[in-house]
Image (cartoon, rainbow, N blue to C red; front, side, top):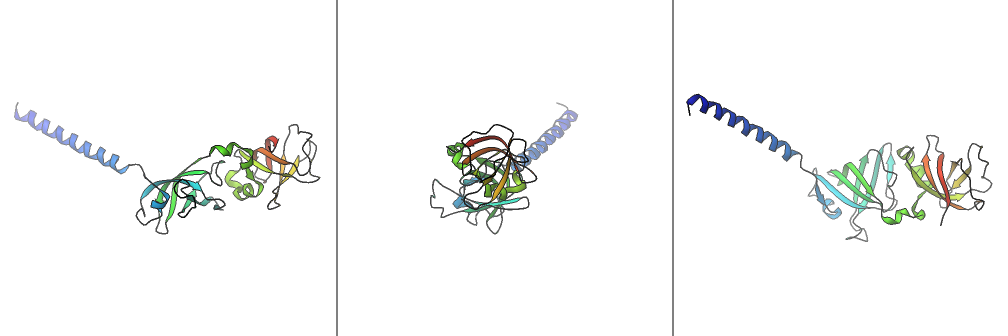
Length: 223
């Protein structure tokens, strides 16, 4: 092999080595988040580190300020009494399935106050959330406000006395939260069962409007 060819092969080898180093650096820098438990995430070990934590949403732990959702999660399987909880902060669109006891898979970085700043939030509903008893209350829906506007949700409440209206009225009836007495006007163009009257508990599928009315696509009595 002549010297000129050797020099070319040596230069080519050098280029290949450099390319491999760059590729390895990119792959190494894009490693996936480390999966940890709620208890592990609550320690100081993972401050400023990218982690993924899965847990159940603590009942009534969420608050919404602007587009920022804050809530707490716990490991229901290993910590049924919720001795360890993790506060999560998420800025982004919230799934209509989000709510009490929903499984939340949160990926993000921990800050020094041990709050997980979540970049990606995935929710999974336990099978019981297929039941009508676990639809959103009027109070919870109104707390979500614009976060769930125009998104499909299920709503439950009682028909307010003397609120039933004909199909061509501005709204069909008013739904009341039995716990807080908060109300929402429900618009519905379909036929209603003759069994629906004042005080009937309903489960409604539809979406919240910008005017904070509820556009229903399906109305059923609670089983």
